[in-house]
Image (cartoon, rainbow, N blue to C red):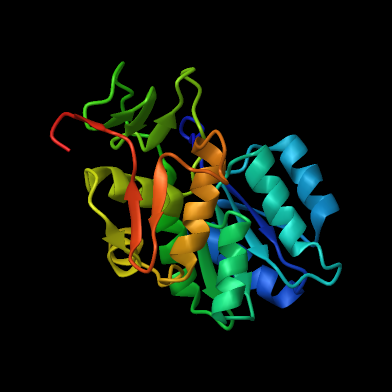
Length: 246
């Protein structure tokens, strides 16, 4: 969850070992009203996080020390902050890897600095909580004790604890629940989960399903909730209750 300090700017960590690229990103972030924290690698990032709560991580995967992927996985597991990956590789397999480590967006170098700024705004907007926090969700779905709150973009488990979801994971789960038992093809799920970027493809939908199963299924190898319809797509396998005007 992103919380903005009262009357203060959001702080964004930038892990980039190219000084020129780091300087360009820092200038853009400053102009956009954020506070950049430039880090050349994992050690400097840990030091920055020890001193300041970060709203987002901009991460170059191809670091000189080769720690880009491990940083992404550790940050997602430990902090749950949104992650935008910056990389010189734009193949589908590289995008799949980015999704597997929990990235919310994926930007290929060389990039337009205006596009990076727009992507940051979009991810922060989607990751932010609603201005008010109602006691109960006004729109969403329930299934076997789980509650998906569409307004707050939160998933709460049967024990009441929130389960952290990336933007793409949340959108995919909402799409499956909204289908009310109908089978959705990968193309349909792609249309329902893609927003203002092209980082999700029909094949990476499978990666998102795998990640969701690991978070909500008791046994991800034998799922009860998200079921595969061979050669077709996916469906939600248990009854769902609609909350409000969903």
